[in-house]
Length: 500
Ligand SMILES: *[C@@H]1O[C@H](CO)[C@@H](O)[C@H](O)[C@H]1NC(C)=O
Ligand SMILES: *[C@@H]1O[C@H](CO)[C@@H](O)[C@H](O)[C@H]1NC(C)=O
Image (cartoon, rainbow, N blue to C red; front, side):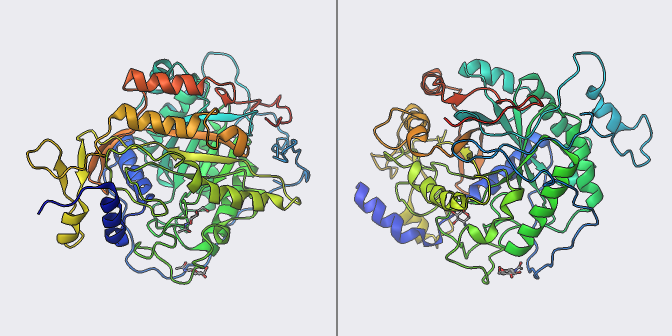
């Protein structure tokens, strides 16, 4: 049977058949698995417990320290806070607790770049918002920051990497080595580091000593400002740390206090998943006791321990709004499709910030891009999928002789990516834009990776620097001074942040 491929019928069909739709941010889990396995070199997919009992916060034995001792945080005209002054010491990184590894242990070799020649480096402070939006990116592989900056003609202020905690402390050949080269690369390329920290064994899977060691490890690159994106998408039902609001908040706060105490250059970042589909009852870690009408607030830790908040949002080849679909088709994003999903979160943040007792929280977009299915043009056929019981996802080659392609799909990479680049970065668009309508958004990370997406079953290329004509569009848009190419006053000589 040849299905009707008119756009309207496609939409209807999609609406009918996506009840069990995959959620957009399942994607992020996939990204995480893939990045971890490809970039870091670990092999396994995360394993999940089948049944989960509520876990009480197991408080770690650690004095919370005087992280708020200074009391008042400076705020700019938008009310966004600068961090408190550093806890006054000589700016030297703490010594690594060797734990009997011996002076010549592998750890020292790995981290040896602390010493040696070169100028003495400054102690960085927590990343604070600058006078615009920091440009960031997520790259695959080592040694890619400099070529990426070169290809795009844009110096990027920040790069992101995923890390597993506490594994990063002991997996010297894998996790730690990859972290070390990432941090070194950030230093060499004058970039801030965004570390997306995940606890694959759950929220009670580490000790206070391990947190302290983590701080010491990060302090090896004390001149690199760090965004610590702690166990993201905690409101999702697909992460082992997901949908346990009380435990999550307690552990976030505990971790934040310890980082405040031991490191000067680490900002804590809270990034739930975009709310479409909440509370995602199909997820493995769905918790029927959470409030289904509160996608965000019930997961928010004590605001004074959060420095940035944010979400991720991808164009994943769908035309239906309000559902987290990831069909992976080559479809040009609809006009004005980037900000609506962001806007709910933005309003949430504004309400949060209305509470003038606390400093305002800047927002970041932790991951975004638009899918280019490299095997396309293809069309995921929803009729066939449904006929196969919903599980069999079949790609149809457009040119495969009688393939079931829908003519409005099968856009080019240039069409798709430049449309999304304009959605996200264009400050002169006729729609809403970052500068005019979302001044609290102060950083954006482009997901610049090519990988197989198991959930969508497509080979996706999310990069913007492979096709010069695409890169040109990015360069042009990103050249605006509103996009910050360097960290602003992130060192000890820091001044109060200015509003845009
Ligand atoms: C589920 O959510 C409720 C309400 O927030 C919470 O009290 C409970 O601990 C959660 N369950 C688990 C397994 O964490
Ligand atoms: C997760 O949080 C985001 C942002 O606050 C929200 O949009 C989304 O609905 C939430 N999802 C869940 C499952 O809580």
